Image (cartoon, rainbow, N blue to C red):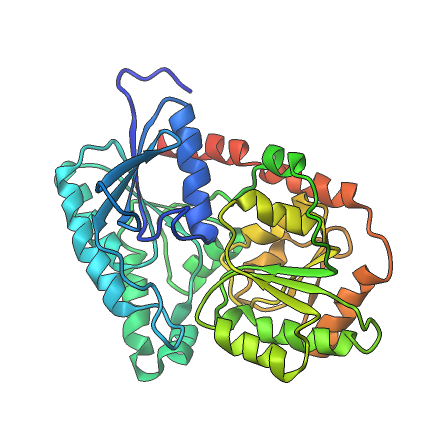
Amino acid sequence: MNTHDKKQKLAIVYDAIYPFVKGGTEKRNYEISKRFAQKGYEVHIYGMKWWKGENVIQMEGVYLHGICKPMQLYTKNGKRSILQAIYFGLHCLKLIQEDFTILDVNHMPFFSLYSAKCIALIKKKKLYATWNEVWGRNYWVEYLGKFGNIAYLIEWLSARMPDKIIAVSEHTRTKLIQDLKVKKEIVVIPNGIDLKEIVKVKPSENKSDIIFAGRLLSHKNVDYLIESIRLLKNTYPNITCVIVGKGPEEQRLKLLVEKLKLQKNIIFYDFLENHQDLYALMKASKVFAFPSTREGFGIAALEANASGLPVVTTDHRNNATKDLIVDKRNGQIVQLNEKLLAEKLENYLSKEVPPDDVIEYAKRFDWNAIVEQLEEVYL
């Protein structure tokens, strides 16, 4: 850490807080915040109160603030809750009472950026925003119908709130410029992995052929994976696939597994309390399937690489994970189609893939290097 005249106070704002809610953004905030705390920063994460007891608790040297009661992040139909976004955004105005030197707000839900901008102006602080993905007008209209244009306007205005944007991928940076017409400075600092932690984990005794991990949302396309297992079962009758995650699609996917009579082939796991358990399951598998069509980055894919697994993901313009894949080195990219997906997955079932090269590729994304890059941006 550089020598500072005064202790730096880093405030990170996001509604969902790890480990109470688990996802890529939550994991990024967790990994970054604990490392900044180790470097001597006073780190605070402000989100919804997902725990019982005091409003402020400490974990791994980081202060977690529950600034409001938790609300469901997604509606029953699997869409992000607008009511929840507004509710959390309004409660972010409470940060006016807080003291900080660095303010980094995640771009979702957008309304927290508007509150943070007001506070940053009053306190004469820079506002940083970490941007995971850009939806753009076309996707918003597809997602919300006639209200999509209003949502796009909110997204467009949100991109004008921060003084500096930290994009998690070159893909996101390009879309900020092209879809949202952002002209201010955008720095690309990717998500990362804890390579040291992953390397020391031993494979699980629960072996599988294929594994998926992530929120069970419609754009993750886990139904295509299930259909591909149905096809692969013709050649590999004892094929096993592990699906790790929870979400609004869970019940529908389990019913699909029953309908296709794949209960002996596909096993569902909830989000695991200990992330090391996920690494253990990855290391006990052969290939990581990630058929998502919308990702701002894709930490799980890098974690799979670091666990020695190649990754098969989707060739879609809104899937930034595909930019992490070097064809036939650490995985392959495929069109969203169950037959094509099955063919790519079979490549890794029928022959050995040397894990060392896959792991070597993942080394460049270690979280310690990511934090060094972030510190240069903040200071």
